[in-house]
Image (cartoon, rainbow, N blue to C red; front, side, top):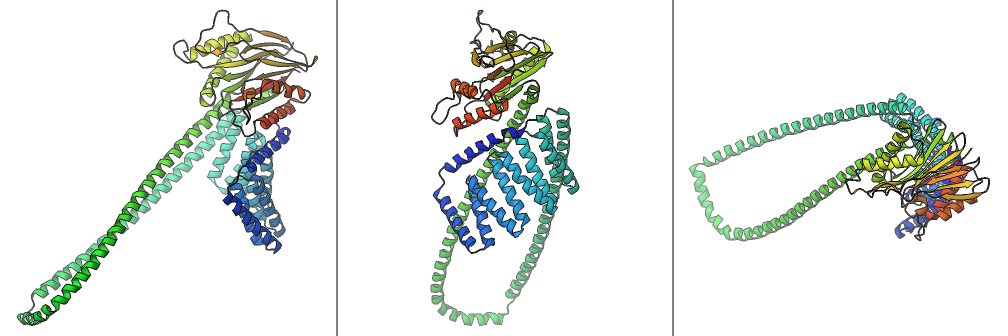
Length: 581
């Protein structure tokens, strides 16, 4: 297992620089004003010894900084919250703020600091005997150890979390811990345990989804029942309205039965009605004016309601389209993440190399998946190692890397070919054949630095396809570059008869150091569009050649980070260093 303590200083410096450049960005004036207002309130309540209001505005300022990527200021405010809660003995407040700081450090990839704060929160949760918060902290710590590739510690926390989740009978938590364990054992190369925990994860996930479907069905039944009740109520209302209509009809019938005497009385009153006609006509005009005015108002509001409904419908359609795009994007990202797991599975376990040589590997994909890969195997007393740069990066490059790795396994492990030049020639034929490049316009290929090392005699055989081998001679303190052949693996152009891969024999001695790489590191540019370059890489290596291999890796990565700063990574990066024992 890779020891994270050896890279502690590098991680600290990297995250410090990251936070510095984030803070150096322009902050909108409204955010500055809001933050200044909070700071003023904090100072006021601090001077008044009003701890409750000071805590309230410290939390507001902390979250404002966090949301606007002012990470250092957010951490400072949360730490002040922790201090005040310690003074008042508020353990829950300390626990929450510790977890917030841990999340901030996790966000800026300072994983060691994140673990420190997550563990503080875990300790308090244990003291409070709050199993829910304990399991939450264990998930945070386990996933952060996973980022540091410290899979043993991650598994330890995950297994403890499984037991607590079982006591709580919380299947969702159990499912989360099983997922972490499956990923960890896959990264450790333990396929049996990875499959075992993935099966447990899948079975619980299937059960939970069934339960969710049951809940949805139950809710649907409840809605149907409610609708039926409303239907019955509507029927009752209709019956009542019908009864009222019958009563009205009965009343009308009685009116028609008015006696003759009553009709005569009505005739007498007719004269008075005519006298009132003029007045009624005037009143009717006024009433009609008011009615039409109200009708116009109602029409106006009706148009507004229609427009509002139309706008709301369009908004709902846009939101549905957005949600569909988000779901599609999530599915694509999930597929690429799964492809990353598959690609990681074909890479050698780094401990296999470390068991034979003092070594380091710098492997930085430009995207989630990489067009670079490194390949390692051991046949009897001969070790084979390659650094391969495939055409492109991302998903297309990843496909090429998987094809190349598969063919190398077939050539060396199945066909037992041990001569590097012959291996590259066969690999070239396999790539042309697999991609049907003699029949199509496909020009994809790969550049390769390939070596074999005889562990008994320390004889090194090198063959390269457009990639050199760098070697530092310990005895003479010379740093040499052995160039590869000027031909690539694959490609539509047919190789000339005189174009073939050649072997270079090197009699290495104890202390000699070999460097294999793709062109991603040397081609990386900075903010001024300048390349890192081979000369800079050689200078960094020579200035630190007496350091341990792990220390050399830290120094090279720091030089690259300082050079690159906020500039986007332009290609996949691979650099391997091994020291002859």
